[in-house]
Image 1 (cartoon, helix red, strand yellow):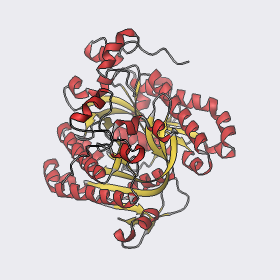
Image 2: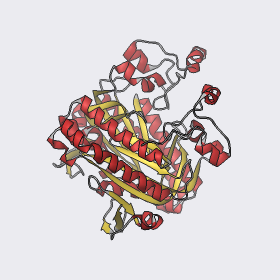
Image 3: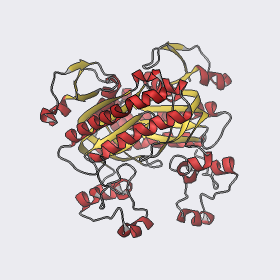
Image 4: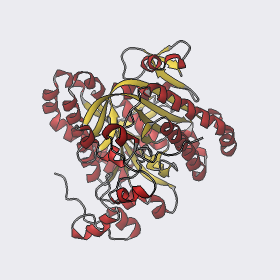
Length: 243
Length: 243
């Protein structure tokens, strides 16, 4: 299922034409200097996240990217009834499914926020088809979770009917970089991030909602008409398509 | 304004009775092993965040904690009109103000998510008055930002009228720990986290909204009646107080 991890950092190779070994004996001297596989994408290295400004020659840049939010529906309700161990195991499954799918399609798992995951596609690994890759990752997350749903539901009990993942995706120009002086942090910011987050909040369990921008970039991967949604923070209704 | 940083890790001292030097010549041998001030709270060390399960003897625990979300209102609109450099500088100011205030009151700046900050009080530094500390931090964030608002508004232009910070705070039992096997991450999850996040979304620029739980724990710090809000994900209206 999961492909072999890369032996060279894909980000450094693409952006700097530098071969940085991530695994095996050649990686040992690099590890001494703290250069190792990134926690955000193990096929890239910590240079890609720690030395962003050195590589990009700016603390923040505007890049074309695709942003995905995935949220575990029903988790908060379960915190009232489930044992700590079962909760941790449920969240592990969710995070691990998301990570595997995001990394498979060259995305960056930028953050986990409670029961949600925030991923960016097209950095540091550049992909022309970043919107399609994000949609593929979203579909794989839904597929992986669906395959385990019945077993999870059995472990958890009847309240698991509402258990599922809601996903929102948007694509376009995004501010990406290291923000903050005292708590420096690598992240993406902007309308695309907000729109993806809002699309995620209106997605039903098991659903993927994408914007027109994603639909345009994913050719015939999406069929069916869009629906207008009133999203908080957006004056005009936003058309979303089921992905 | 900002107090001197701690020379020993407050978390390790409180929880393990271990003196871990964070600064000065004594800290050098610790740094060789990757033990240094935490990015989430520089008065605690990376042991507190990296070796959570070793210290707590469980991957996740239920603790009493106070959770705060602070969000920079008007930022997304500004991404349409502002230069990249001005945007970065605005976000730096916001992140740095939040970090200074959170750390001053012994909170943990767990994550920044786009234009929002997520902080936890009562871990790893234990404080009986964690709800009051969170409220003090929130007030300091508002004060610091207000003091710079006019200058920021001048730099940015007239669109800065809506520029301000919305803050939500809740207090109570929270699941806290390291979740995920492949992308292991230290965070807090549960109803308290969701309620604080939702309270933040309804707070106006410059406003702090706290739940009844926070009001009860902060004695006479909060005056005035509460107002009922319909918060997404909560079946019943939630009473919030202006803090």
